[in-house]
Image (tube, rainbow, N blue to C red):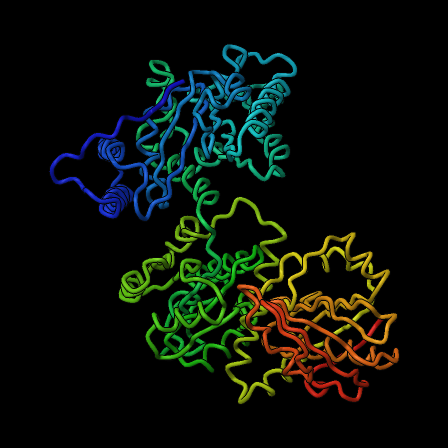
Length: 619
């Protein structure tokens, strides 16, 4: 095993002394390399970083293992610098040359404990050796089987994310004309391997592909490789290519290690379109299929794609609100429409204040936001006021917009899960409710405008798993905090009544949000064993409807009294007065528990019908 690290030494005079100072100086040095790449400077930074403490303020610590069949040590400074720019401080462990299977069988030989991220680099020429000039049958299948076995071993033996490099073109030029015509040639087989890797690995949640074929093609194979260094030292890549390699790898690691950004907040003038809407007028701003409007339309297409992948979109613009919303709605060349934006602040107020309000309205943290604006002054202000916000300055030249799209930070996700889309949908719905709440003159008007629909069901056996889940997880609005398994819920249905309450409104369906469990239904007095409401439904007063349904059923059944209790916990203090506020009389109080009684009431006593649409199912 090759461990690439050094024992920390006291920093020389002038070096930082605290974790915060270390973080600032490392990130500043790494940022300088982005604009002026220098392998010598990257080496200096790498050496400095090895003197830093293991934990550095403002940086995430990640252990990276590399299995390789090439000399990768010259890459490490560039990988290190690129990761720093993503807020990640890396330590590297490099496996022995051309050894994969041993580490797959025993990952702790690479590092103990195993790394957080493991890069599998396969240099194609070394992978097949002399056979690349006359590949035997099954060459592609053999390579794929080997990669599969190594990946499977590492997944089984570690909790790491495995980054698999696909096969880049050969560093040594091939007899290309013949290879172009022969499906059995090594260049063609290499392409088959890359396609098959994507097909086989894309569904693995802990596997990502580093597409070296694409990265080399974008940079240019003639410049990416150094054949002389490859022949002399088995290092295929030219020094000038290494920053590009570092950034590509760092983007994957950041997507794994850093919390994802959730919202892109964009300016309008000279960002969503070219020109100033208030001065140029809607007929003269640049947006459409001709240059420069095409460039801005491309950016809108990019944002629309982010929206389909679970990102929220918001507007923060100094402008006249009616002008902007009308233009978004009516311009035939616009890709994005008002409904694509979860929230907006279009006014003449400070953009920092607007940004804070948008975060509150959408119920997300500022560290979940990406701020995009063409003004360097506004970008600097946001950077200063909210360092947790990722600020991306939009290019002044429309010709630079495609490049900006390709490098825009915070938008990379390895994959989009159904849960990501569901979470985004929930956040959009909540933002819509908050906007409605701000515009309503009073709480009742707000509740009425939500168009809340309630469905109260009895003995819904299909809901048993959800009912059990609510009893296990609900803490704040839970009068007794009894915890029940699905089997317990089935038995309670056999002996009593289990009520569920589902809720929907004009923005979304919440599903089951309330549960009441009643026992002793065959006696003169019913007992409310459990009563709870999910925190998602707070603030609507719908819990009164669920209680009213229980009391009405008790009246229909001829019960003389309904009993209930409140068992105090550290978290359910908000429910202390729920039963007294709804007509129950206190009958007994002991340490931590209060008991109540109420007479059953017929359905005419139910409240809130003017605010909600309530339906009942089951008996």
